[in-house]
Length: 159
Image (tube, rainbow, N blue to C red; front, side, top):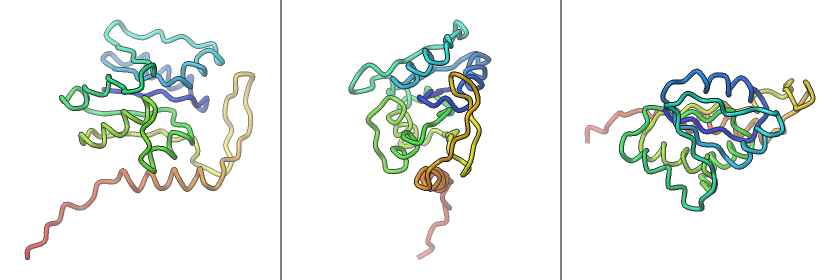
C-alpha cells in the first residue's frame, strides 16, 4: 500500500496514528508534510517494514513501483486544498501529486481524504482547535475530485 502525506494539519495526528498501525506501507512525504511534522512536533515512528520516500527530487523516481504492481491502493491523507486542486486539473509537480497521477495511470485504486469537505470546520492547529471556513473553490474542487475518481460505466456499444 502507498500512502501520501501532505501538508495539512487537519486530522494530521490521526492519520499518523493510522500509518503507524500499518505493517507494510510505503509513505510518500511531501515537503509541506515535513514542515507540518515539525510544527506539530510529531515523529515518523513507523514499523520496520515501512519505507519512507521524501519529496527531494524533480523526477520522483519512487513512483516507478506503480508500474510494476507494487501497490494495491494509494491513500492521500490528509489532502490539502492545494493538493486536491492540482489533482483535479492534472498537475503533478510534487511527490504527492505525482504518485496520485501515476496511481491513476496504472489503475491503482485511490482514496483521497480531502480536508475541505464542509463550509465550516473545526481543526487542530499547532496551538489548539480553530474554526476554518473553506473557500467555495476548495469545496468545489473536492466535489470535482470525487466525481473524477468514480468508476465509469464499462458499457460497450453493440454497433
